[in-house]
Length: 347
Image 1 (cartoon, rainbow, N blue to C red):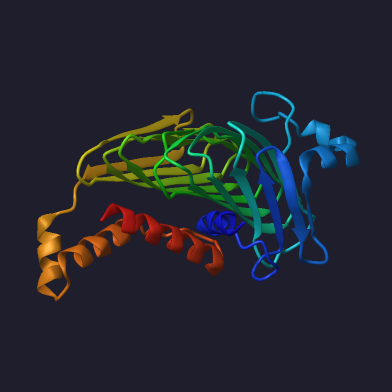
Image 2: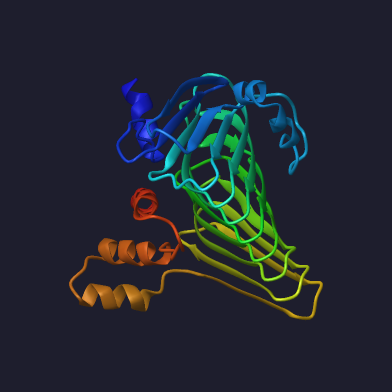
């Protein structure tokens, strides 16, 4: 159990009432813990139990992503007009079995607000994690979803995510990859309705023999909707492919892609930004940059009294600092902790 606790903490899990509204833990294919610490406004249970309780939930199953089978996961719902005070945490832990399959459904009812931290980790040195998540962000709701990964080096990870953001709603997605991993392929897909907003932020480090292929696709379907996709990736001997694709279908929409990559001691980074306008009255932009740590920056910091390692550490920390909008300080602190762990491994 102590080893398990170390793993859980490495992906931001506390499994206690302090600074959390609820906790969910799934080990392999078994739900081990569901705890709710607040009195009202939130529902959390395993998905199969939720399907038994609510007939209407069938209408949400496999609505955004292609059906792949019958397996369990978590069901999280923020009730109408609720403000969930602390983040909900959920951990998916690959411990004994070779393949873990998970299906999650998250619903934020009208004018609700909820923050979710999900941590994915493994004890197995090799294995396969298949995680499917479907988000339904109703009118005027706000959801921030922070995913922190810390896998063993021979694990393969293939999450699939679909998001529907209704009128005037906001969805914020943060992805942090902490450790060496064999392969990750993730490409969340979001549809934004009128005046909806979505922000996707990723912080990724690819170590030797890691193959990371991540990205986001956003369809600006409703008038006045807007999206931003920002990625920071570092390669230290690994391969990174980072994708961003924004489709503007309606007038008055705005979208921006930003990808910055840094290569430290080998590896490759391939940035693929794509913009598609189907209406003349849109505002779409992108920028991408890939390089290495500049020696003159290191020299300047060393001239100010820092050692070389301290200078490189400071540059890496600054590079991986992403200004994430509209998330509470507690989530910012979790992301900062994750970045510090990566930073030590990169030196």
